Image (cartoon, rainbow, N blue to C red; front, side, top):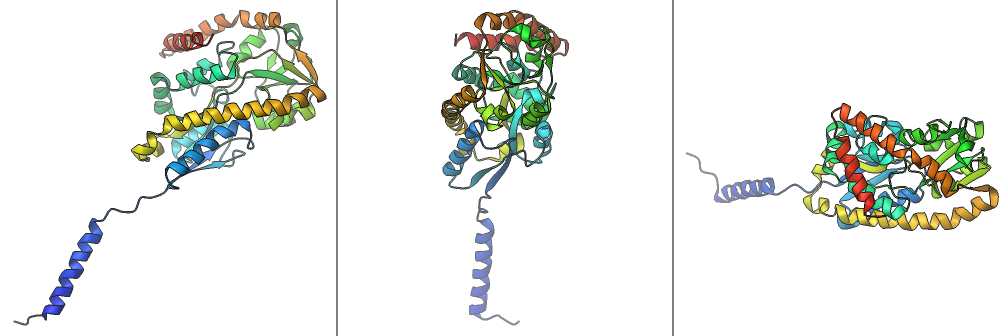
Length: 343
């Protein structure tokens, strides 16, 4: 029998031990990178997700990064839910009004004259609704989406080339507003026409739209609608889109527990960033609008006429949801209770 030299045996054992140790060592944590689709340019409303991205990058020491793609660079605005569900990208901004029947229960917050007028109060109500278990289930079951970040919007005013100072002025006017709010305008002869935010400038310039409903004031300035308009309302203060930042559930579930636990803190930072940005935008844009356009006050008594039929629209929405087997009454009652806290 031939015996190997002791030095060879020792070397072999050492190598084997090293191999075991290396094999047993945990693999280095892989950096998490989320691609996040956001339509339109950087503006006041993007400050929320920007604050969240900065927060998570710092808290994770660079091991979790949210890459924001502006201008819907990752895909069309109207296909965000499908893209997130399929894993085309991890997250994106969504506005319920762009997706008829895709978020049926969540559309409750787009009912006319339901949410509070003050932006701060709207934000609190929207956050409560987006966090509701029934809404979370709707997002998860239909689209594999989780509510990630707030994108509450200020109340809507109208800018365009038709003067609107009373409900009578709406007759025959092509007005851009979301579906459920459109019902309140249709009563007075308005012709609701839906186009996306990035299409607004061209739509007004070409006359496809007579008056464009947008959150006041930052959005009008961001999309330069005042350059192709003559009038702007103040006082209509309508509800508009319900927007939010959503992410793919699988991507969320892969995050470390410590980062998941920081979501409420990140959402608070996003909310504070949005409040600050909206205030700065008002200080910048409102004087410009008043200088370049005819400011058209919309009196409280005219707004009251618009709002008078709102509850009938709410009830019709409940009936439609219940007929489809969805708890419309429970959700509407929840929202109304949340709104009552801020009156």
